[in-house]
Image 1 (cartoon, helix red, strand yellow):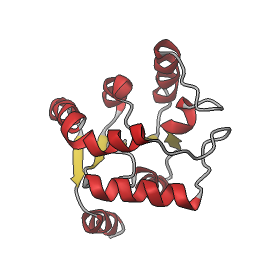
Image 2: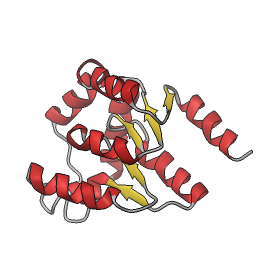
Image 3: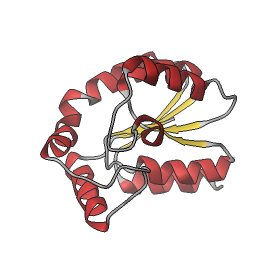
Image 4: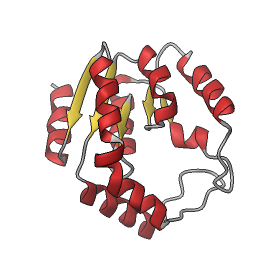
Length: 158
């Protein structure tokens, strides 16, 4: 399971880990967002995540704090990309400028509200994530810089 703020590099490292370990990669954004940026109801989302974690092997990419506890129950490893807010905002802005189109029916968009969420992630979301990870029985890898991500991936290849 790979978690972190938007723009932290979750999708990039998830693709590499899924390829390395031959795991089915589940980008939660692709399952959450419906065409036109429509959100499912909480009940629909919990049911969908329940179906996704029922699989024997998986690698999930995404936060979604309202279903994190469900996913942690079935995870054995969590990679927490705890990158700086400025790096995350920069990456999201670059992704927007490059026109990333990876969620079907949802054209790339950027809103101040989204940038504010990223900027406030360290203060608002990180403490809750860390609390959940403290209670997690599996292995947690917390990476704070791109250099640490590179070292982590290099170690896996040894």
